[in-house]
Structure formats: C-alpha cells, structure tokens
Image 1 (tube, rainbow, N blue to C red):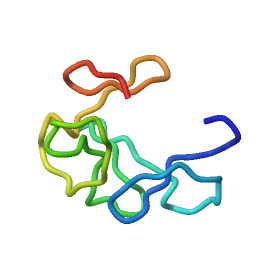
Image 2 (cartoon, rainbow, N blue to C red):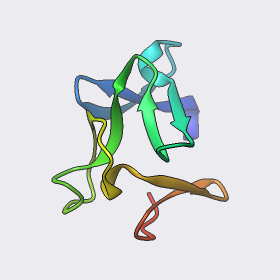
Image 3 (cartoon, one colour):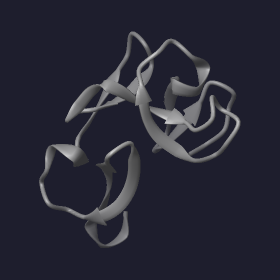
Image 4 (tube, rainbow, N blue to C red):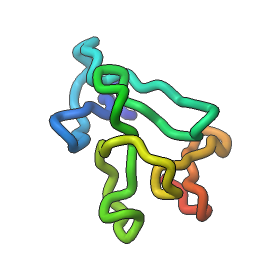
Length: 85
C-alpha cells in the first residue's frame, strides 16, 4: 500500500496501519484450503463477512467455506466467485 501501510489484524477486524513489524501484520496462505490465515492467530482465516453476503473482510474461525477461499490473480486476490479484493 502507499506509504508503507499494511493490513493489520485488530481483534477480529482488519485495519490499515503503519508498519510496526508485529505478527498481526503477517499472513500465511494455506494452499491446501486456499485460505489466508493470520500468522498471530492461525485458527482464524480471512473471511468475507456474513458468510459471504457482504464485501467487508474479517478474521473468522477457519472453516471449509467458499467465503474463506481465495486465489491470487496477478497482484490481486480473488475469491472463489471471482470478486477481486
């Protein structure tokens, strides 16, 4: 992001903040489940809020659900239904 700002996990929500080298700014892509997990809280995955009925992203307990599946498309993330985030 511009200005070296990063996506940061705060509780179960994401905020954009300055780089602070905290584990809340690190994420792991799990190829097996196609989910993005927070390094600091690996039992939670990046999720589209309200079981996919919203465009907001939250950290939610990992489950096998389409609203937690993402693929890389160039430099962007795309969910299973083709929406870019």
